[in-house]
Length: 191
Image (tube, rainbow, N blue to C red; front, side, top):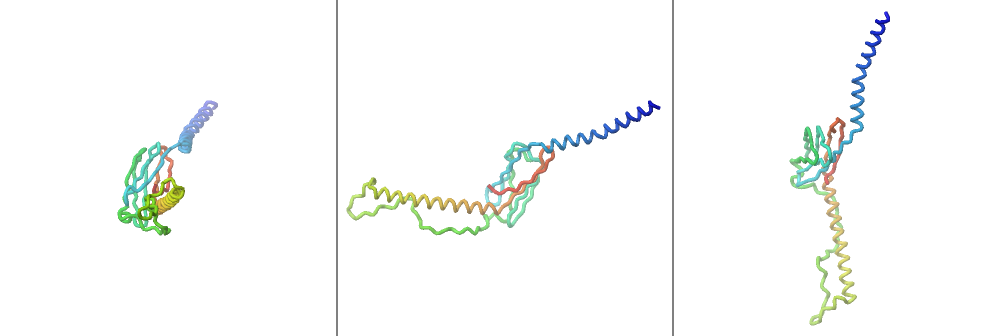
């Protein structure tokens, strides 16, 4: 009888061991997935009106990638099995942005024009031009240079703000799986 009990105990122990192996394997896989370091970094920019370039500039490949691009007029969704590092794809918004971005409600502040060259210093007929080192001539040129710099800064800020508002009209969402199966979603703006 003791032999039978020993066999039964050994059989139960073996069954318990066999039953815990899949649990251990799943636990190890889950731990590897949870601690996985996958470096996938997305960047999107508009190459030309309506053509959005999506690039994985990370260190690792992305798997089962779904990329969605949309604006007020159109939505495009594309899927890829694998998107390698430094790979790029073009997504084309067929309708809206072919003619360029929608108008943005950005008001330009009126300011007097500033010429690209310093204005001439007023001369009376038959008078020799003033010495460029004269203090009033130096001050005249300094004030022009300051006005020109402020004007150029304002124009640059206006152009940058307009570009940013136009870029906000397009959104990009990328969903992908890492190599070990961890899912990620990222919402991008155009750069």
